[in-house]
Image 1 (tube, one colour):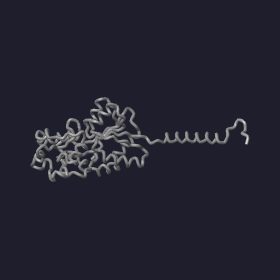
Image 2 (cartoon, one colour; image 1 turned 180 degrees about the vertical axis):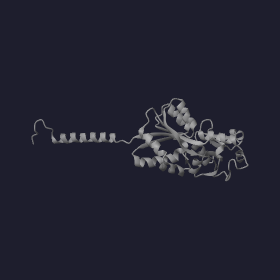
Image 3 (cartoon, rainbow, N blue to C red; image 1 turned 60 degrees about the vertical axis):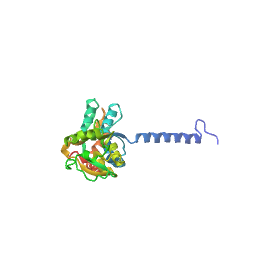
Image 4 (cartoon, one colour; image 1 turned 60 degrees about the horizontal axis):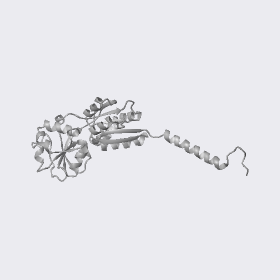
Amino acid sequence: MTAVPGSRPPARRALAAAVVLLLTLAASVAAEAAPTVRVFAAASLADALDAAVERYESTRGVDVVPVYAASSTAARQIAHGAPADLYIAANRQWMDWLADRGIPLHARGDLLRNRLAVVASATSGIREYAPGADDRPLVALLHGDERLAVGDPAHVPAGIYARRALISLGMWDALAGRLARADNVRAALALVERGETPLGIVYRSDAHAADDVVRLGLFPADSHDPIAYPAALVGTSPNPAARAFREWLGGDEAMAMFADFGFTPARD
């Protein structure tokens, strides 16, 4: 068959149509790509926040990417330009530290609260101890060169709270030289889980999440500052998807999930 002058052969017309279709589909996919929310959060939030993220993503069409570290480490990363949309710390100090360095923070407010707990390794043989109620000092439970696992009190919030509690109970001087200082509270918990230290000071939520430790008791709430988790949007122009996620985290659905992991709402 002779082609009509000026017209394209059928094969070429089909190829051109396929190319147009592919370009149209690519543009549609790009336009509908899920917005991304980058969350830098305290290590102690890992289990609870992962569960919350999974729930949120299942119904919102948003890609939430959490990064967990000690609050101090996360704050320093943000100060050095890490692309965070939302920061959730385990104390107000590191949120203040970011603000003092001129990092724009929006919708700042306390999200959750926690308690400080003593845990023992399953192999330690220690089954009972209540800080502040037991007559024995905590150091009496350590033998030989055994140490107490804590987040590093120099910068990790859990360690800062622990130091204050031990000072309040008159135990700091005896224990200061016998600490296994970890980079974050989950690393301290891991030392106890693996039996590398017989005891550790972690958050109640960490003790709640661990299967291989014995939960001994909580420190008196008045032995240290209230354990607060402030959250704030980061950046000059906050990510709208991050703002929506932050608002959801403070709602009843998310709070019920956090409660399952040993946290309490800051609004209580």
